[in-house]
Image (cartoon, rainbow, N blue to C red; front, side, top):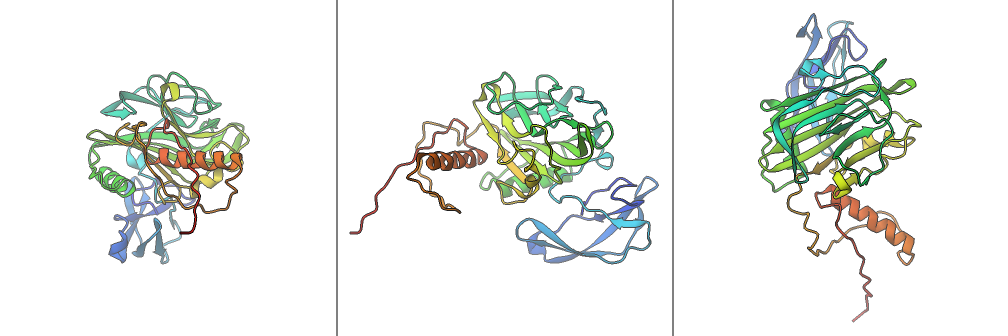
Length: 351
């Protein structure tokens, strides 16, 4: 359930019920929370019966629902990983126009992206962010592009917000969103002792694909910064399949650093994004993008990994596939995409 106010006439009902209180932590056990229904521009225009909530290992919650006080109320479901969005969060909406973009957004805090500092950003309707100029490109470039601009692609494809869905954004320099961002980053990147000072949330909520107006696709790109650290969270809800070209990840000028989320370049399998992750939270991908420590390609390190399936590593094709997967995993954890992975064969003999 969302724990921020939800727009009235949402979630298939008149006054959608939302959790009036923060979600618990695992150590809190079972807690009781009030629920509110948004009506007549009052986020708590209806108060329904309290429910019980429990946080579980694996990043999900269990709710014990009770009957709502009347038939005009219904519980609202939203991915728990999503940050607040929509009019209730004070978002600014992009114009509903094919292949459109936001106007230039002046950032309330500079954002460091692989060594380049940006003071502005654009939210493009087709599922990606750019810094220097807006873009109406609806066919995604194949990363690495070796291009001239930095791109952050939540799900770059031919989206159409004219008849279905909303593209919106908001930035924060105080409040609960910063507290949540601080907790998330310290969970996903331990030992940094990180404190968020700025958060930017761009949301594509139930947006249709071009010429496929019955489809709905929802995802977020969250930029987080504090001191000299910068991070991206990509949160995925329901993602409809499509025949359009698609891509999710990021790319930098001249592709010195880039990443492609596994499974995001096949429109028939992208619905799996809501279950995939590099931080063990279904539907979430997290990246450190300031270009700090961990990007020194002169370092030589040993890596021990456990393979979850069997491949014959005497075949060169299988070796290349395994090394590519390892490289992508290391990049997702903060290493530069220029990192080189080599396999050394060791023959084990009995003493």
